Length: 203
Image (cartoon, rainbow, N blue to C red):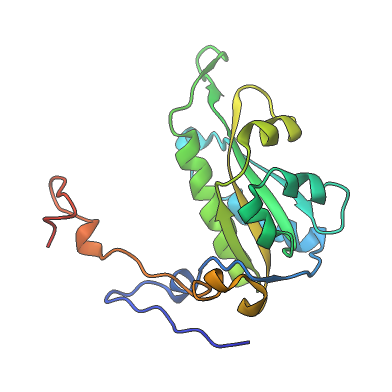
């Protein structure tokens, strides 16, 4: 498989973070439940407000009964490449939490932020274990919500496609040139001290 250029940054970002990227070319390998759960277990250790742990990970593995159903909720563009992957994990979270004072459900304003933190840990752990991931938001959220049998107080945020990286040549020509680690906006356009600075004036 063609080697890829390594990302570079001026600061000391850990290699396991720099080396994570989101391919679309996967090989149609199976993943065992044990291997997948070892990846998902990393998400369980994410931080969350009041340790509420609002995230839920609902998955289907290749060549299991739920696989085609999980694929069917993806938009056609995403399904076309995701069908070669090994697993699909839908990330959901509970939008309320139980009040410590009354025990009644109250709004959980950080549930999506917390679920995002869990999602990142899952992706980093997958990379550490020799797998690649590609998170997507392109799927029918109503169908997924119903198909996953989520309660009304849960929302589904994204799907993480997991697999072993395959050759870029299996992708349509317009995607082959994109099958490499992407660049990022410069840090000085994103981080500012004391107050917000619009990207056009950051320096």
